[in-house]
Image (cartoon, rainbow, N blue to C red; front, side):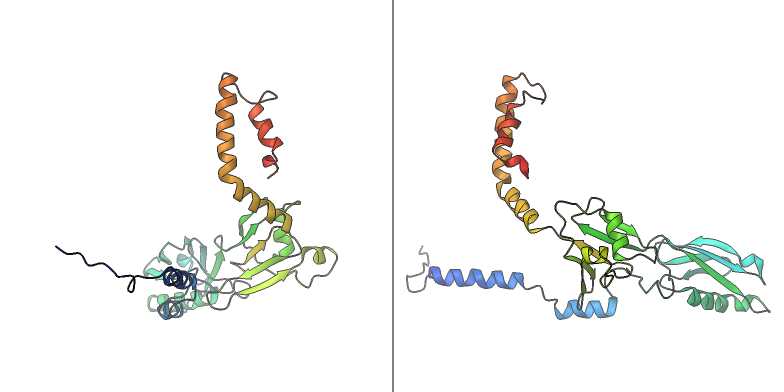
Length: 271
């Protein structure tokens, strides 16, 4: 049996292999959405399923509570909650899809649905109590994460609530992000200018806004060094703990914790 082998003439050179690897890497780094992805975005939407501008007129999302009242027909008055499928269950008419509707939209839909059951026109009034609209504050903050969107917050309100880290937050380069897969909006915010009375960048928040508080240059350097040294410091800690811990008979820390003293003396504890 004979095996086919590449002759030196057919074998790939190191340069060819390197070029192929770089080409694959560049292809992997290409984050531009495909034509199919863009089509899906245009047809099916992106992000949250139900969206709108709550500052202009509140709209319904999953989990919102609805209070329906009709002075002319008191039996229609009730309270209900938008189900996970975006619907509510109403007497007589059954399930009605309401997610994404504004107050005026829902009032018109309910008036139409109930009109066959009454000779006199309905006078339905809808009130929405929302608890599912949010924005986020992320980065160098002590109290970051998700915040309830109440409709009247500004950037400074959000930053005060999130409590930026005094030593690591770069408050002169805060970013307000309104995400979009094709045309995201990034608005620079200068906290220090705002606190000096210049409200130019103290934007009024919209739901789903993201406020990013970046680290300072020194903080970034510290994070980089800590990440770089992490494998080494982990081994040092484990070895030191095993060696000195066994000599102490397994006792806890305190002033006799020599492993911690040695570790900190090397400067690793500073990060």
